[in-house]
Length: 595
Image (cartoon, rainbow, N blue to C red; front, side, top):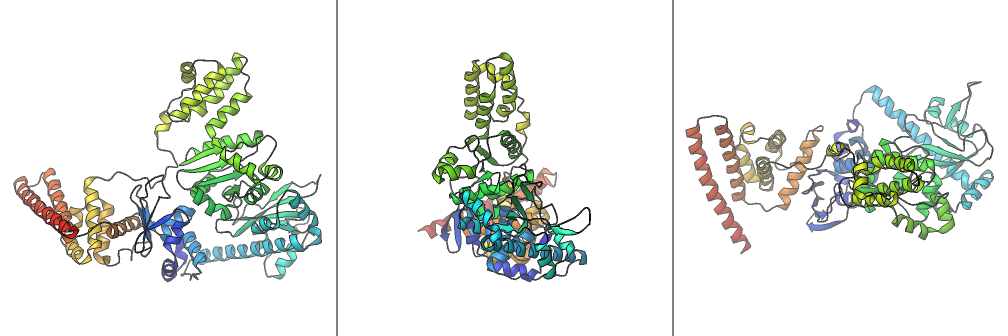
């Protein structure tokens, strides 16, 4: 586990410093529900009635709708798409906690130190490029070009846009003087080696430099645009893949767009760097860029994590052939995730940056409001490009439309699009429906991207077992005695609940302490039980009812297994009577408390 590099003391300091309500409020609006307790709409599934509960003091959460549970580290892992170590570092950065490293393997320590050195080298280079853009006479052309695209200084500084100078060794010499090695310059993607002489030289020269950052805002590379026309080199030059930069995993500007994407539950995807800057300047703070690559599965996972389950990805890609192909690929990838894909209808020949410069922010806002579901957009595009005047043309259109329509579940959207196709092809709806139909068996399987947190329906017995443990936490004095009276293997049918009961025998006063590091399921259940213990009414008589119910269930299982039926039946009958008495007692106490 990545987080194993840090000491337990460091992790506890981070947990103590983190403001749970503040962290969660960045993802969903919370309202106070009691001392240290909050409720809100669950960020992990769509709902209209708040069922997401947060205990800010204990730093845990639980959704009573989908069952998502965990602590502050789990929440950051799930919402930011990080491993435990990344979540720990994310929180430590946010709350100013210094992390101390535990003893680690020498090779792992060497890899970590190298990565830290590369981050430092890239950060100082980004700062250098940024300073040159505003201070160097050589960068005058770059400043003029960016201004001609309608980009102001404020937005350029926000994205840390810079200028890579034209000399072949400026970064190389300065980095060497600062103590960085040639191997580190190559590893950071800042230097290239001449094939002819094997000499190193600056990779980026005489180019506008756009820093590429990870989710935490750390510079991991650059995308650089030349201003020369007819140059032998490419118009855009990106960092090569290396220790830090993986082009298929990152999105330009995501570190700046995450908060807006989370609050709006949507993200706007453009193609280029200037598109993202222009959209952000126009008030579209949830815009990100593909950095010149085709959309990948890894990027879709990042986008899904940014907007949350049930969120929306809006494609603001060029309307040319490559843009259409990118949208089709995006739809195929998004089909395996719990997100909605919509298309922003950009005018032909205009990218978002051109559109903002020509028509202003209001036009952009109106086009975003006109975004349509991908299936509808694709159907309209196929029909508009088809030769519908000939039988052969209509056959080709039907062939192209078949996978689009077949991908939709039965419902109003599919019916409307089928009706639209029938009208344009002057065919009956019944015939078009049969021609476009495809085997729905592939849709019956659970989508690959369905959140694993989707709640399984718990059986009555496991629900009773969980209720019993929640009452033990709520009533620790009575709970200790109740836990002593149960036999783990006989009274608990769920292995997970059994582990929870065993844990509580030694940690009832502080249920979240001492949890195994590698048992996420147990940590999630303990978070749920802690939330329930604080939320649900608790009384010793209620605990007695649940304890008796566990005993009755145990006896019934033994009877079903062929035990001494006579003795077991008598015992069950007595327990049933005891349950009635305990229920009556509990109701009387509840009535007395209400009175």
